[in-house]
Length: 121
Image 1: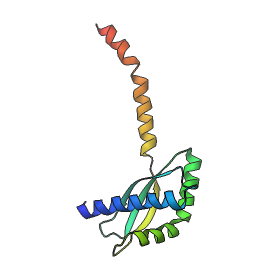
Image 2: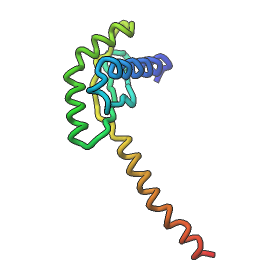
Image 3: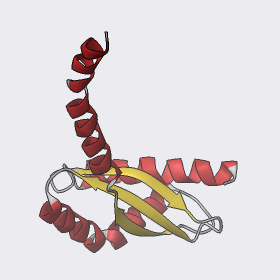
Image 4: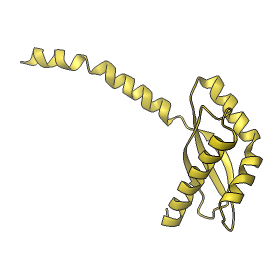
C-alpha cells in the first residue's frame, strides 16, 4: 500500500467519524469507525464499523448508516478534495468482539497458572 493510500485511509476515517459525531450525534452514539480501506484507484472504499450492543443492535445501526450513506458522502465531498471521492461500503467489524473473547479466555487461564506453578515446585 502506498503512502498516499495510507494517508487517504486515515483522512477519510477521521472525517467520517467527525461527520457522525457532529451531524448524527444521537443516532451514532454506539458507532465507531475502526478502519477505512480505500482501493488504489480511490474509487471504492470499505468503512469498517464497530457497534456497541448485541447483534440485533449492530444490524439496525448498520442499516441506519447505509440509509444515510448518500448524505454522508455528500458531506465528505465538501470536506475532502480528491479527484475521485470513494464510494463507501459499510461493513461490520467483528475484531473487537473477537478481541474481547480472547481476553476473556486469557483471564480464565490466569487463575490456573499460579496453582500449576506451586505443584511443579
